[in-house]
Length: 208
Image (tube, rainbow, N blue to C red):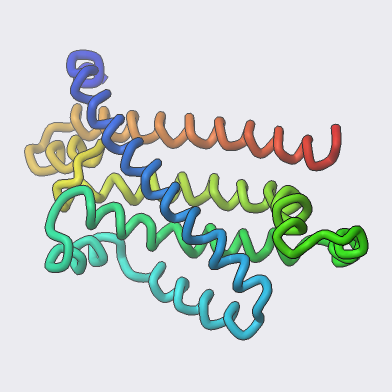
C-alpha cells in the first residue's frame, strides 16, 4: 500500500487510461450488440449461428487474441480496443436477445393494435421493457472488460496492468498490490454505479 500512497499520481493516470479504454470498448460494443441482438431476436435462423460464432470468439484466450491482432493493427490502444469489443459481444448480444424475447407477446400485440410502427414499438415498448436485462448484461460486460483490459498492458496499451507486469518482472510486490487494489476499486465502483442504474430503470419500468 505504500507504493499506492507514494505514487498516487502515476497510479491515477494509469487508472484513467484503463477507464478510458474500458469505456470506449463498451460504447462501441454496445452500438454493435444492440442491432445484432435485435436481429437475432427477430430471426431464429440467425440467432443460433451468431451465438455459436460469438461463443467461439469468446473462448480464444485474451492474450492470444491481443497477439493475433498485432500484425494487423500493431501495438497499443487500437488492437486492445478491438479485442475488448469482441469479448464484450457474447454477453451483450445474449442479454439483448433474452431481454427482447422475454417481453410478453400480448404487450406487443397491444402496441400493434394501437397502430404503432415497428420502430415505435421498439423505441417505446420493447427497449424500455428489455432495458433491465440489457443493463444487467452491460454490468457483467463492464466487469469482464475491466479485468481483460488489464492484460492489454502486454501490448503496450497502458492501464493498470502496467503496474502488475512491472511488479512481476522486477519482483516488486508493492507495485503488484497497488495495481490489484486499483483494478478492484475501479471494478467495484463500476459495479455499484451500474447496480444503481439498473435499480432506477427497473423502478421506472414498473412505474414505481
